[in-house]
Amino acid sequence: MKTLLKLMDVKTLVAGIFPVVLGSVYSYYRFKEINVWHMLVIAIGIILLQSCANMINDLFDHKRGADDAGKAEEKALVTGEVTRKQVKSIVVIFLVIDVCIAVYYMLIAHWAIIIVGIIGTLIMYYYSAGDRPISHTPFGEFVAGSTMGFGIMTTVIYIQSGIIDLETVIVALPTSIYIGTILLTNNICDHHEDRKAGRVTLPIHIGVHWAELLWLVSCHSLLTFTAVFVFVGYWPLQTVLIALLIFPYRPIYEFKKVPKISENKNELMALIGGIGIRYHLAIVIGILVSIWF
Image 1 (cartoon, rainbow, N blue to C red):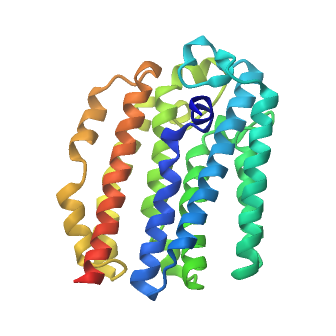
Image 2 (image 1 turned 120 degrees about the vertical axis):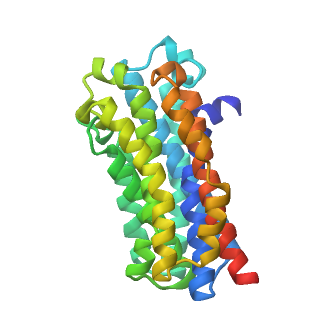
């Protein structure tokens, strides 16, 4: 189980839960439609698909020789705990379960759900696969944010309510930006190793200084978008009030002080994870308070 959790890279999986929970709560707020069963099943499907993405990334990095003994704490293939064949088998099992979930929602919601699933799976695969994977380009943050933010949240809202419109797309923007920022954090920490491996990630393309500035702007934009959404009537007033109260200002300040090297990646990833948890928790609580009171 410990090895499986390492392969799944559980510390990254919480990002996939945010759009599922927020999309479901938003559906209840705007359309008075929510199904807890759907929320749980979709969350499981997202966790499995994201785990596949992490394992496929490890497979290709291990094949290319990009992972070494220095990553033994987070890479099970490096330590020999598992073989490539075993990892591939786990990926296949997870994908089969995800296909079953997609077919289920295709039957009860709309046939287009299976198309969304296929597109998401292809993006997941080519994010790490091929001679020029998406993760080795400056577009990784945009692709990850768009897929896991806009893609997941709008799909969740549609499954819950049967409705998709411009507003349901726009409200996914903060979550999309946040998910892209998670990847930006990882790439900032790994910029030395990525440069040596010939990757041209966003921090390498625009420079680490500008990448750090983008990180700060992205985190602060979460509050900005919250205020704008309240002003235009997308979210209730309670969301911005609670967000202002519990928004993690200190972690953002601490980010500026921590050296951006691979040895500090766990600390910085925990920091960005905490920011996401507190921000999305504030929005969910704000919406629920507005509904119940």
